[in-house]
Image (spheres, one colour):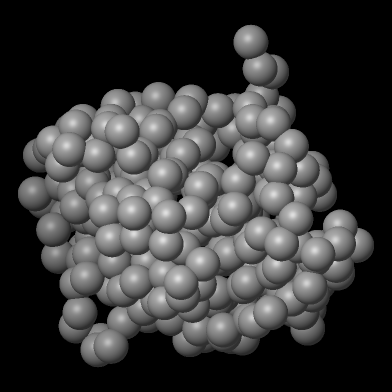
Amino acid sequence: MTQYSQAVRTAQAYYNSDDAENFYSRLWGGEDIHIGLYESATEAVVDASHRTVERMCAALGPALDGASVLDIGGGYGGSARHVAARHNATVVSLNLSEVQNERARRKNAERGLDDRVHVVDGDFENIPFDDGYFDIVWSQDAMLHSGNRERVLDEVARVLAPGGTFIFTDPMQADDCPEGVLQPVLDRIQLDTMGSPGFYTRALERRGFTRRAFEDHTRQIPRHYGGIHDTLVEREDELRDSAISTAYIDNMKKGLQHWVDAGNAGHLAWGIMIFDKR
């Protein structure tokens, strides 16, 4: 049995909790759990989150068609299902939350995608596949939960075939972020550090990758977390009556506001990063 790191165990316990499951499935619709690309301030998170998936697919272009894809930190499997259904790809969704994975498998079956989307219990610090197994590795807003991102990138480089592509988003600190200002955010996610565009670029270049693009959408961070915060406030009474604890809701409102404040202050970064393995 794989021995998860402390950071991974912390994230696993969080996403397996009843509070988290009810919150994310109700506010995000049980399909995606990642930052959206919003076209208006009033757009629903479900639509904006799905647009991120579509934008990433468009960025990959024809290389995605018929590809073997690994989604690390696949959540409810929404991205995996979209890629499999729209691009005739075979997708593995590797995810640490058994609760989320159960929902993902049900949705795969409902949509007739059992043979194209395979949900695997596991974590991205120990990817259970052979070297060079995948054409594309995909990730959305998951790597921040690792306490050892160097290890995650080692594993990505290992399982990705030569000439393959790593495409991801991740909430990051800005390259010029002053020391100490993100402590409220770090406390919220129970980690000591965050990645940055410069960190990922340097670390992946050392592993034989070339950066193709960083499509910067940092402005979406305060819009996204602010929208979730406002929706939570609007639906607070309803959510309290649906098995989400008062303590969780109160902590979530505070945590979301920390993301909004840090984003508005210019201390965060987010966007679509694409790296090609040489």
